[in-house]
Length: 204
Image (cartoon, rainbow, N blue to C red; front, side, top):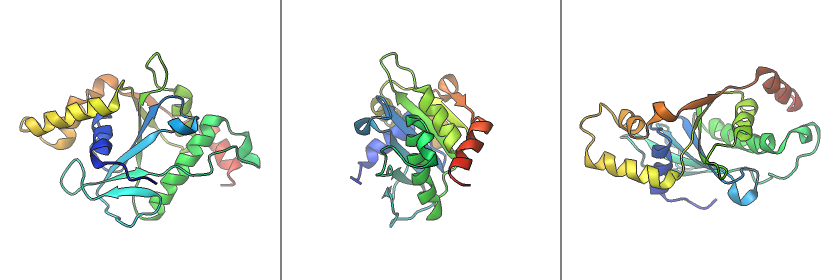
């Protein structure tokens, strides 16, 4: 995968209000099922694995001791055959994300929480079908934090951090406050029956 610049990855994290480790930010820009508009990712971690497979690694992060990753989406994103061929487009895309997450975990890098940000239509709302698909396929809760321009918002937050962080106890607290997480945060919960059905189709 092409190595994305560290400043863009950190801006994505800041715009979503994420500084804590093991939290994957998924930024949508357009319809997520279209190849050229697949969601972009960024993750802070305290686990440094420079020779990571299936992700880009940067030794620096938003806080001391942190590093930054960007996950690579699975190449085979077209229609799948067999039982999982019955999954919808959003669920199949989320399955590609799940495969990338499992690859990270198998190399010793925890991925525990998921945040969806960006805008995916002209009205400026997150694609709820995709958010629900991520929750169901990964069998987890997903935080949704809409943001009209994640790159610009994140850059503004990072500049504010560089100017004055003294009034905040930590980088995490500062980023959450500057990103106005409490005002924006919504939650999408996994649907237990659907998660179990997907697990059955995957032979788990």
